[in-house]
Image (cartoon, rainbow, N blue to C red; front, side, top):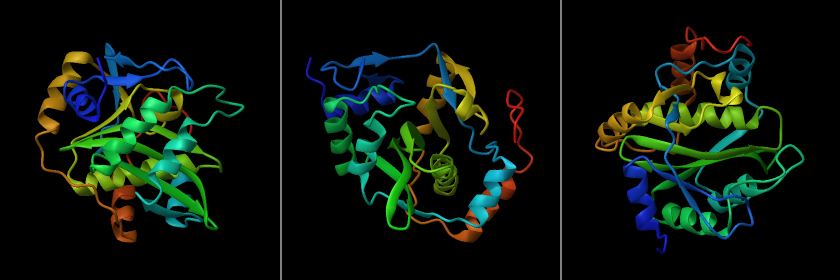
Length: 222
């Protein structure tokens, strides 16, 4: 069966997403995890050290200006990440979703250089985080908080992180069961949310304040 952008969107509506075995594998596999990671937008935890960076940022945050470059950097192998699941077919499909307005990137810039970011898929009030990268300390963390703040502003109801990792757990991600996830997904994709390109300093500060008393039980650092 040929995998098209339309088929990919349909898969997201039923809670399934694609991954490749490796960055040079020609095939894709459909993933439907028994447990799904989500980041509740009203319960995001921002570590104290990161709050300071967000309030006095050395970075410039932009959205959707270099989506393809973000995709390429997420697919790039590094010493810490010797392989990725983003193959040429993944790149092609997500570029098509971006061109149709269903995918977005959050980009972290420093002195005119792209040094961190992430991308994901948007359907109604659900956002599916796909991958992130960082080439500078805290850059991907800053991008993630800016994503969450924008989704909160835009009326989204679900931020799907696919899996819960130690890195993501510090922000308050939790695992929920497959059926619970799909019930939430069904409701979220019917919500008429929008993806904000801009986020004011006051809106970011309000989101930081909202998060101040949220501390994930499974994360002990700050």
